[in-house]
Length: 152
Image (cartoon, rainbow, N blue to C red; front, top):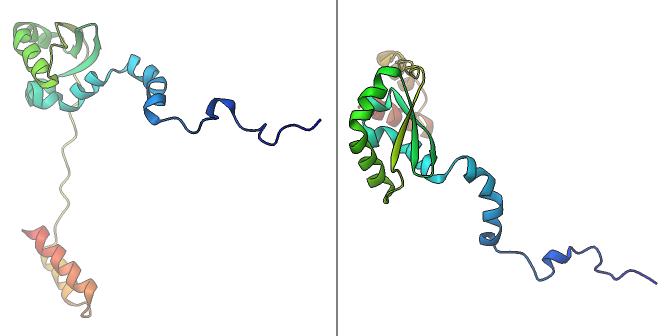
C-alpha cells in the first residue's frame, strides 16, 4: 500500500497557517519573564522620568511584583529614599497605572560617565574651495547644498 500523497504535511497546520497573535505569547513568554515590557519602557525613558542628574548616577535594574530595584551609588541611595514618593509617582504617571508600589535600592558603583563627544575639525574654506573647483553637475550642487546646511 502506498502512503497518501500529503503524508509530508504537518498535521498541526492542516487547516492553514496560524495567526501571529496565537504564536506571539509562546515566543515572548521567556523573554518577558526575565525582562518585563514595563521595565523596558522605564529604561528607555529613565532620564526624562527622574531627571538627567539622577539618571546619570542611577539605573532601574528589576521590576518584580510591584517592587522596582534601582542600582545607585551608596550616598545616592539615602537621597533617593527621601525622594521615593515623588520618584514612584513620576514612574507610575509615566507608565499610566500604579505598577511600582515600592522602591528597593541596590548599592552599585556609579555608572561610568559617557566620554565627551569629539568635535570634528571643520575646514570650511578648504572644503568650500574643493567643492567650487568641481565641474558643474548634480554632485557639485548636492555637496554645495550639504555644506550650506552644515554651516548653518
